Image 1 (tube, one colour):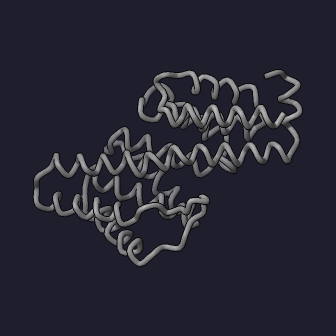
Image 2 (tube, rainbow, N blue to C red):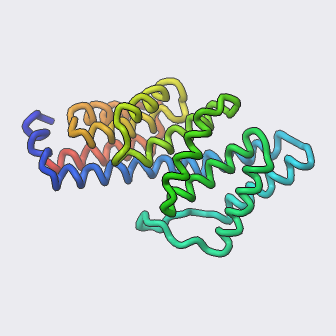
Image 3 (tube, rainbow, N blue to C red):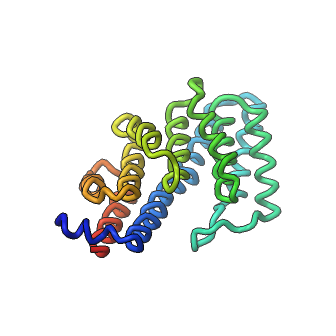
Length: 229
């Protein structure tokens, strides 16, 4: 892709389209982490601890996670909470406040994700920031909190701060390195640095160690960048 194409892509309308697509695609990866990764972690935690209180809280967490389902519709917009989801939120809050260790952190992550999806972004950011700063929490869960904290600020957050936090994850957390690079590419697009974005996306698309979903989204976004020219 030539420099001329990048210059043509600098028109405000096209850049806005690219930004929206970048943020939407990055969010897909985080959503899968929440639904699958967090759910799996909760299930493992349930079987690894046999104390009665822990079993009870773990069972409540897993049921609440199932009842919550998705906070967004097929179109990507948040839908009003159902009675079942409201009850699930109450259960998650109980686990978050009554539990300890990973199970409480997992519940807080899911609660914050729901808050963000329903417009309570400031509260969600505070939750994720608190988890990030909790040195006693599992490093992988802290990394997930960092990704979510950054994802919800890709459009208007402080770029140097976002880059700093995401860069710490690249190469350090195998589960999240590719997702962090994906968000860094989205920040490049936000600033109009299409050359850097293309380099990151190309590297992701060609990285056999990156999750298949990340590689596919990187390829799709590269096509969007090319079409904008």
